[in-house]
Image (cartoon, rainbow, N blue to C red):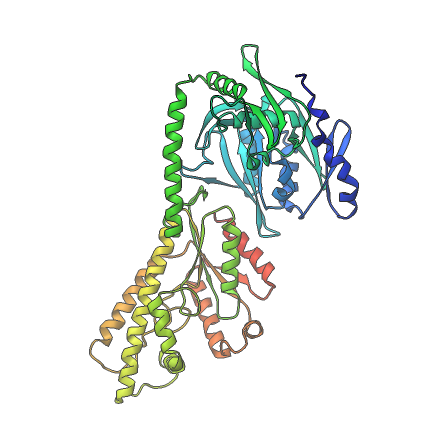
Length: 537
């Protein structure tokens, strides 16, 4: 059957026909210049400001790069909602790293059993401090193909791309791979991942894989031939055609392409058995890790970890200044691509031991009396039986809280050692009892046998917790009016001022504690916290 040129496939002209209606109802648009034609695509979300800085810096440094995959989701990727698959010339790698350092870029690492690990591939993240978000660059210094968990054959590099086009996105010009080269790259990957019975002549590309090729037509007429460089001036032909289930590829051509890629990398056909074995071992390991991750959150290293390791971040503030809200928002932002966990170190409504939560409900009617005893707001009657019972209960309660906090602090540091970003709502301190998650057993308790030993044990636990300092402590500061406007009646003015005074004393003792103004709106506070954490990763 006669081959049909790719430009004649109907799918390549769909964007052109839809351009007027898409551009008329939206403020922004994407323009793709190809064969003197502008292709406009609607933008669902505004791009991150750092995207413009990135591509401007790459072009100014004459970096040879281009986007090679998932062009249909590029608008979402530039808005910080998806990843950008970028191919980079190997000679420009050092210059690329210098630009990443200037933009506060961060490289992640992964265990070898994950599917995103192969030579020449790296995950880079570039922050946008104006919106508490970041770009994800899926960088390829040469594209390697193979089994899903065994990609080791260098099939394409920057010089293998025959033609680059320019995509104009809100004034930014981005080089993207041509439709013909995009199909070649896709078929090179599919050659190792599409399988069929020996008597099957045509293999259908699954629908979820067709999404990886933004400009691969969904409807064609006739059979087409894609040419590949087979080495030593030879060519490998791969036939494709439209089918009932989408795009179909000739099985024999895929097998020849697979053998050609292996031989060009110096491997024989016998390496296929090794590839299958390694792929199976890594995939089983990956599935086991996913199961353990569901059963034991934070118990295994995450898929992506900051190259410098994990981090323990503690947010400290009086009630009403947004600790819990900001902790939840920070986890949502970082957990998009990194391993991130949220822990609660207080005794309020956050997560905690079921025993402590149950006792807390039972003792709720006596909450005011216990607080008064802890804060020395009234003299304990040493001779009364009721006072002795309450003092004993308070001591046991303080020990229970101290033990729970001790295990939470230890767990946070274990998670950080595994590469996770741990955001803590509150953090224990030892300067003053009864405030800001400090010790709870007061010094003026009645002389009851055993209470002094419990008080010493509590102090020992808090000293041990003080040895496990957070990597970053952030104090949210504001005035009492802000706290009252957000949580009316949650805390008295005297209690608020006592906590702010204690926080000032903590900062005087530790110059590494950083202050964030909590008087602003939630988004502004979150941007400030995001920047402080990112710069320490």
